[in-house]
Length: 471
Image (cartoon, rainbow, N blue to C red; front, side, top):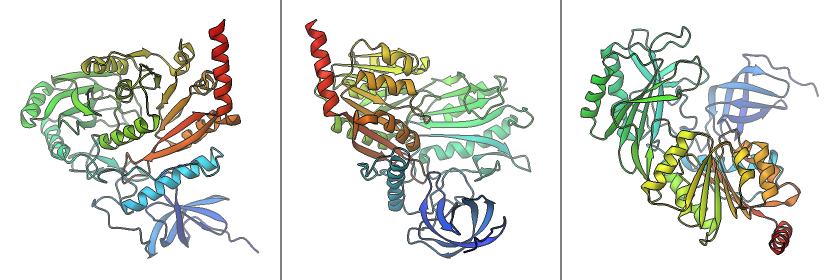
């Protein structure tokens, strides 16, 4: 049978069967995989080929011939353009199914696990209005109007927004009005190509349970005329606004925040309640974007661990203590490890604020601090960034042999990679994986994997500890 040769720009018919981990629809034709954004499993579509490779092709939707039963009308008028969401055209129940499949497929294909025990995704309480933080790049229209929004899919074209359906609705007035204030002040918007102008990003943050807000402008340098006066005006206009900050990022970089933040008016933090505790959150603090789903996942972790109060727990990559502090209340001793000094400073402050005294925090790279633990922890929490754990962390854990490991991941590919290493030779086994939906309307999925030390290793470890104690 002669293989059909495809040409760039050609129209072909394809039926979408799956979704990729980036959110694109996936079909198959002419022995090739075809990736098509804005499609849903069950769609039969005419698509235009954009890039053709020997084993796959990338295409865009040209005409929908037969819609999937899971296809719905997006709730946002710019959903087909804005790059902030990928899945507003997919009904929410199916989004959850797709995310569970994403976790299963990563564990099978990358991790090599057979029928991994992946639970249904922990659903969000609401599929819209959930984001407690939004950071918008700024731009200028052809007529000179200040714009804020997200970039169009596959481009660097800014889609101007006056409201966003996935951010907390209480932030929407600020998004629309602050742009006008920037316009009236005559502040210049940063031009990344020429490295000219002042304001790069607008960042809005809210405590979901307290309603307290922060407004931060990311600037190239501190020279922003009349910012003090404007900041005081914002505090008067928005009663829940606790502080106005400037963050300086003078580098030619895609990174949003720089290393320095100054409070111009009010205080440089908001208060948020999380899992019954009070946390102080700053403009550049890492804090899960969906507060309520993070609390629900924590409840699952607490239930699964069933801590008895005698354990020594280590929370690696602990940040400001979001998981460390609630879990510390259920163990004998907890230690948080974190490479960012500012985060550790906040974690210590949050421990004092909540009168939690059986917890310590250490500054440094996890791969360097973990081997120096004087006592072998019974429980280790891993919550690394998207790149996953350093190999040295995996090796140290396999040497320490804590009875239980909870690996919380925001990228299932690196989760699967690291679980494969941890479970090598049957040393650990996966007891359960609980996905959670922290980002409705997108392809992102969080997951907590619960690992237990195998019976053989438990016996060997117990014997080793007994021998040591008899010396």
